[in-house]
Image (cartoon, rainbow, N blue to C red):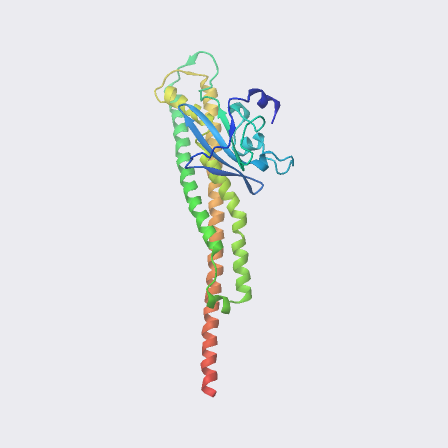
Amino acid sequence: MSGSRGARAGRCGVSDAEPDVPESVFLQHRGEEVAEAWGEREGEAVTLAFRVARDRWESDAAGTRVTIDLLLKLSHVSDDEVESWGGAGGIDAPPDATHLTVRVRLKPPTAEVAAGEAQDLPPEKWQALDVIWKTILGLEASIEAARLSLDGLRAEMETAFRKTLAVEEKLNALQSDVAQWEKAKNRVHYALPKVKEFIHRATFALAAAERKALDDVYRNHIEPRVPLPDADRVRAQLEHFQKSRQVLFAQGNSVAQECRGVLGEISRALSTLQRNAADRARQKRSDKRQKGKHF
């Protein structure tokens, strides 16, 4: 944990309570799940909670230890967004607890515009800001649709990976067909981490403090056309936010395309295997009948 973070720590704690959180995501680092994460809201206050295995949190090994820095990085949360958090040191936790819950309190959402005289803008500039924000909302709707679609594709890939052959298929399948099918199924191992990463990023996208601040700017200034401090800076923020949403949406499309390709390859390999196995089974039955006639 960095020194600057330690200076602000203390208002967020670490506990062993098992939270009742219906929606959570799993954070991955180097292809391995390292923590469960969810958001908690009380009024305008937003807290991110992370459930971490005690042995990973207290580990002295650099390659396996889970830290506050790592959790924030995986959650795409910057130092500027954090108000306070707690660490494991000094926490009175039951010695037999296997997991710790680390809570990170985010700063209250504000418009964060520069001080100065509010600017009334010409209609075309108000309209431009309005269009950018509505484009962002459209992208977010598309990202959410992509998240739901990828969640379905994830389930399909997991089902396809676990599928086993029927007894007759095992007896009659060609070795080459089985090898091709297994090779296609193994691609699931490479696609699933990408799916989980996108689902995590898409889930946290709407909870970002910056997004809440820009939503406040839109509702309090852009939509009602109320004079706006530092309009150029706000527009730059909106354009940056729009670009980040476009990148995330493109990532979702790319991952979805890869997943469909994996499922298609598995399906084709399995169909070939089953067709050839059925042909061999028929041929064996025919050979037996022909052999019986000679007797």
